[in-house]
Length: 408
Figure 1 (spheres, helix red, strand yellow):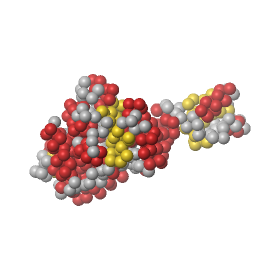
Figure 2 (figure 1 turned 90 degrees about the horizontal axis):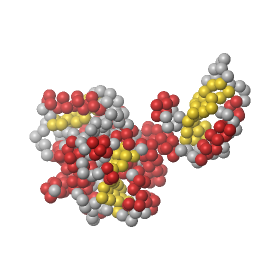
Figure 3 (figure 1 turned 180 degrees about the vertical axis):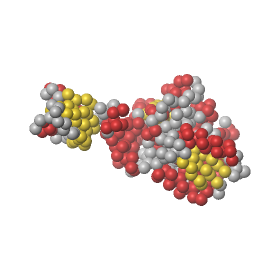
């Protein structure tokens, strides 16, 4: 343990020649809401807007003999590796899925410049990873894992070194987002039992919880990629060796739609832009309640690589989770005045956000797809009550994931 602490502190000092420490900022808004001293470790303000460059830096500085570094990533790891290839003047070959958004590809290319070659392979990350590892073995390069590597884990532990220095002590509670486990195992290895932990995952990618339940790393049958910075199908073997004793009670799985409410709140109230994975630790505060009241709590905001083209989707998800927006299919009579009759059921706070209807001849009734936004979820109780009282047939499809993918 003493060796790990010394190595993490040494890595932190070495990093200062490449990039400054990220700020640790007390958040008055969150502190007032939760009755605690809430501090945000702003990894979203690093040069690549995530903590991933720390692990890449540490792994690369320990491999000066390596001529080529190979990585597979669709996001933050790719950017961290690219940034460090340029800093160390090393060649990097980064494999990314063909489906990677152009914004992420462009940023990776921008950070790496002439030092980095990007190869687009496969529709899914697993195909991309297989190709990267095969290529690395073929050329004798060094494969730089995004999390399952001792040097990467040690590099991520520099977050803990900075927190301890900036706060002047060890915090009472740490809230840490988990994907493959590199950040969590780094902080746990550094702080040990000196603080309390909550490890947070997206509900659709809770690979740590699955591993804890099974007693070993397991592969999730399906992953929801919305929180792509933390949506990992299988926890790392090396990271799980560190995290296997944390206990299920110290983990949380966050609903992706609820996560969107936190992203919007931080953007609208605090002016802080977070990617979904970067908002996990803040959203988790809602579940910690009395356990953190009066305590000093540090939340790791792990990333801020958010494409604003996704903002309408985030708003949509947040509204649906909050109950102020619903979609339903209504069976409407095909006669003049039928639509006007329905509109009379809407209240002063109800607004039609979606309306799709095609009149079909030779039918007495037609189906209408309707989206309604309102100011108060209780308004839907009134609306649906009125529809029931007047004999209208309808189906609420707001939470039907299969239908939502096709029609919303």
